[in-house]
Image (cartoon, rainbow, N blue to C red; front, side, top):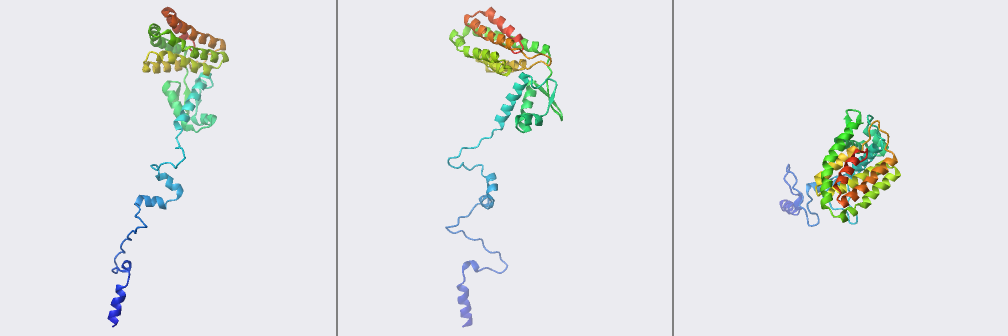
Length: 275
């Protein structure tokens, strides 16, 4: 009788509790209400909310929220343009050394975008790297300006002479607003604004050639020619106005297909500090 009661009690125990002594418990079997979670998702589920964000790169953004974009390149570009303006205006003095942290404080940014922008200026020849100190603004000579003017003439004069013979008059008329923009900038005496509008005018004229590589090379040479000399005084407003007037005269010569005047105007324009 006692043996029969013991057998009946053993048969009445649940399956989960029946195990051999010393043997590990069998894994829980997921029921219909508890699907098995992959190991990676399980870790994410157990992680704090702040940590989960580090593992959700592939998750779609929540409805109604715009994706966040990194502005690193935008900041670097803005700092680069600000430094170029400072070079043209003479705020960055040739021969002086400037550190990225100090300039970063000036612009209200970290040193990183300043350092990246300065590296680009070093490639362009505007500054040179000074190890453990920063960047020195390049000291330029009158000979360097003359060399730049010569190279620009060799590139742009033949192109403009060809354009004078092939571009219809209506296209030249459409460029008048660009020439007027340079005149307006010159009238204010704003060297940086004039430098930008001056380059825009030349880029647009050369772009009519359809040669993108030529436009890039010419624009780089043009930018280099706008950096001030170490001892040269700032260009006077009257000088800027005179240079700007040459743009309108050039358009008229191009429209009239007067090759002699085109050649003369372009060469004389390049001899100016901001031509």
